[in-house]
Image (tube, rainbow, N blue to C red; front, side):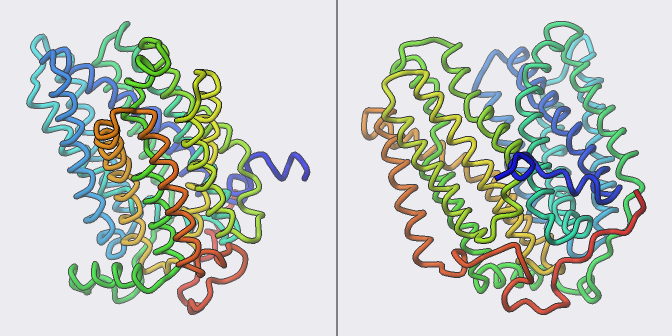
Length: 430
């Protein structure tokens, strides 16, 4: 295999201006999101001195995000997706600007940060499905995996750089600057996204009752083996083998370190994910995409199991990096298959459910890990058990959902009418 077939495929960036605009927007937005997230947590802790209040703010943000995602899925299939993205991002820019002003006051208001979390989470959720549903209209069907890899790369890079940069800015110019920079990033993003073409809904979708529209999306999930299998196999990983909540105890008790050791445990999966995205060129070329996805999730399960069994810190970090690599490959393949097998009229609703699961799943998984660790009296034992259950679940899904094993990104989705096939990429001149 040549090097060009392994490194991340940049064909979608060369093929058209519109996806380049989305990519650039996502790249800077991921950085800004982490600036605001870290700054808001720091500000709540400074104002209250309570980690419980920080956790409460995160919970409020997560709940409003989930509500926004479900509503945003319906909206993305009924209204021009470009308009949804621009309006929601404009509202979020105003909210983040308010956070900057509040932080600059001599006496910042704690309640305003909570209100802003509700507003920002809700509007981000409303716009998320529309942005995700836009991708299949901006790239060719054969480039979905490559486009997903590029967008994943922006998220991983933002996750590696953003929190550290937020800490530097907060310690220097101050928290208000973190919010102000993010607000400016939103304005730049609006300017980048404004030239995108209109993306109107499929004819007839506007008049459908919201409850019937949501029922149609759920019915599609129930009847489409590939999409249902994608969601089920993700549950195996994020619910049963999500060890992040155990890192503080593992770092201090199991590996005998301190805060720096805990930080390394959190960093290792992100490093693996970043390099996994860089080496993702194969994801768009592999013919048996479904089997590759099953293998990628199995890699996560095996790596998490071996991490729990590792007596040495550096060996544990290596397995966590391997887990991150498998997770990134899984995310790229799942996103591409989801968009490939979902008709355009349902992209918003199905995408919103996928995003909602991606948001809520890790939280449930971390809670489950904590409860199992308490029941077993061993955090390492809980990690090993979770990895084993994940592998058993992956095997069960692979056997029970043959459609997922046969899924591929090459050729039209089986049983899907031509009218529902992913749209051709936009013809905007480079």
